[in-house]
Image 1: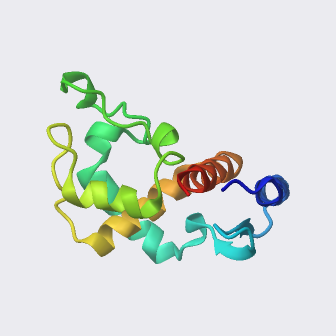
Image 2: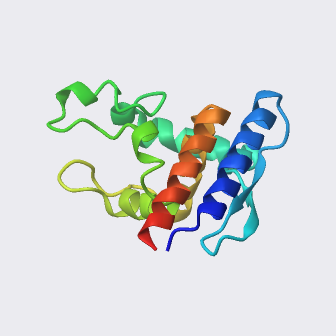
Amino acid sequence: MSRPWSIAVLVLAVVAASCAGETGESEATSTATADGSLAAATDPAADSAAVIAQGQALYQVHCIGCHGAEGRGDGPLAANLPVQPANFVEHLGEHSDADLIANIVAGIPPVMPPAAIREGEVENVLGYIWSMMPDTLRLQLRASQFLMMEEAH
């Protein structure tokens, strides 16, 4: 069931957070939950520097070759693959974080092998990927995630 007021609240939260991100203010935002209530959501880009650093190091070893330095699916190996690697700007807003982690852990045959790292490390890589996105884009992708999950209900 769609709740126009919950979507409006989410849009307002994204706009407010976008403005805060442009001025360098807090990276924590308020978002509407599936039941329409507001909940504080910590932006993954606000993860600790150590988590982001570990995610970055793992990304550089396991992901950059196909997905590229900015996660756009244009890594040095991409041109030689039968299928274009995922562009994270296109996929982050289309899947929940849990689905993204599950896909990375299990792999996406025949395109992507299962992750050669533990699930907790995959979470750190995902945190790093989110941190690569500019504030406004990250908030737009989070809004897309929310709307996708809202439509699924």
